[in-house]
Image (cartoon, rainbow, N blue to C red; front, side, top):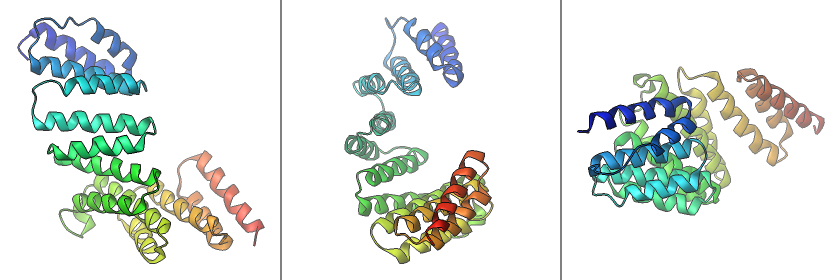
Length: 253
C-alpha cells in the first residue's frame, strides 16, 4: 500500500475486526474509495466482506466478496474470494452453491493451508446433502494433505493431529451412512488412537459412534460409548447430555 493514511486506517480496522466487527464495519464505511489503486481497493473490499461475515451478514458478505472478483488480482486472491463465498453459502445452508464456489476456489490454485480448509467445507457440505460417497472422497483428500509427511503421527504438531482425528471421525460417520461398517470402525479406531490430542476430540469420536449405535437400537454399545464420551468431555453440559443419553439406552436393555 502506498497511501500511509490509508494503511493506518486499514490496520485500525483489522484490529477492530478481531473483537468488534460492528466497529470495523463503521470504520470501513468512513474510508473514501476515490483514487485508490486496485491492490488497496481489493484489500478494503476483502476486509469489509470478512467483517460482514463475522457478524453473520452473509448476503452482504457475498456481495462484497463478489466485488473483489471484478478486480484484476492474482489467482490466489481469486481463490480466497471463491473460498469465502463458498463458506458464506454454507452458513446460509445453501450447500450446493457452497460446493460450487469452493470447487471454483480449487480451480484457482489456492495456498496449501487454504486448500485443506476448502476440502473440509466441501466434504461437510456433501454430508449435509447426504452425498456420502463424495463426502468420503473429499475427507480422504483432506487427510492426504494433513498426513503429507507420512504415517508416523508423532511428527505432526498438536493442531494438525487434532485435524487428523476430526477427519477420521467424519470419515467414520460417512462410511457408516454408506453401510460400510468395517471402514467406519477402522476410521473410528484411528480417530481415537491419534497421539497427544485433547480428550474433547476423543469424546466427540465416542459421541458420534454412540449415536450410530443408538440409531440402530444397539443399546448396550450406545450406552458404553455415551459413558466414555461423558468421561472425556471437558464440558459440563455435554457430560450431562451424554450421561442422560447413556441412561436412556440402559432403560431399553
